[in-house]
Length: 366
Image 1 (cartoon, helix red, strand yellow):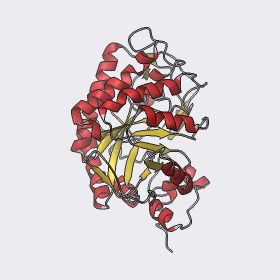
Image 2 (image 1 turned 180 degrees about the vertical axis):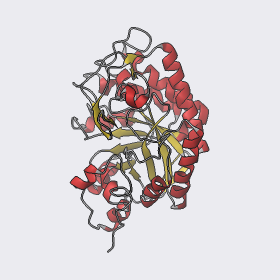
Image 3 (image 1 turned 90 degrees about the vertical axis):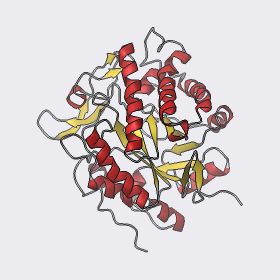
Image 4 (image 1 turned 120 degrees about the vertical axis):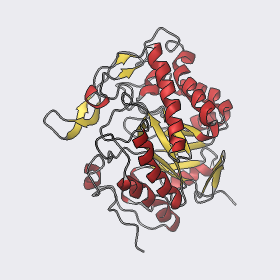
């Protein structure tokens, strides 16, 4: 009998009720001032805890790491205390939760980060993020040209990731997922168009993957590799004006170097923004170079996820926007019940606001 999306799955010492994950999605609903996780967020995540694993929205590891207004941090005691409400609510509903640790790099603005954004090099592509508007209120604003990170910046950032991982365990998380996708900090180090450094973090493929690998190793040394995951997006061009001819090769080489860390899983973000189709040969190469559990996200259906599972290409399957309007998504999939669509109103309430479009979507009534 073949495996099913609804079978249990385990990695490290984490036991999941099924192979369905809720993908990380920025919703910008924190309490102000201080970007603190709150009771409304706890309700939101608990409503969606029929997923075997929940990955939180991107969670900045420091003030300069933030690139979207009102996103929850993990670098103050108030953040830790706020997240405790969320993790307790998720665990009470029977699910597991990893916090996605986030440094946006150049995808930011001083009005959000409090200082000039940082990146691999002082290079910018056209890009917008959710931040304060000059006329008041919030909306999409153009990002700012970053400054190139110094060695001290890199050392401090690795230390910030380690501290954030410590904070995550204190807050009750089952593990952390390091965001290295979508044109954020680590992705700009991996790609040639955004990394024009001449030091040990630029030039060769080995140098360009160094910062990510050093961070993963440092965090794994601190909390155990089985509690550390990583998200990459080699087939997505979000945050970049043009594609990178070497990114797939670089990611495969990085995965090979990650394998001995015995990470929880590697998470591939696909089929969003500007992207190319992922060839089956890539999925086969991933399995060849790396024996870590594989998660895939990106406009999946239960049918396409099951096909990928049957072929042995992935172990876990993450769903994003369907979870916005269907809090009991895994249950709907299991019974073949109809889904609530992701309409214009859902898009308008994605970032910011209060309960409407956040926790007022009902569970399905058969």
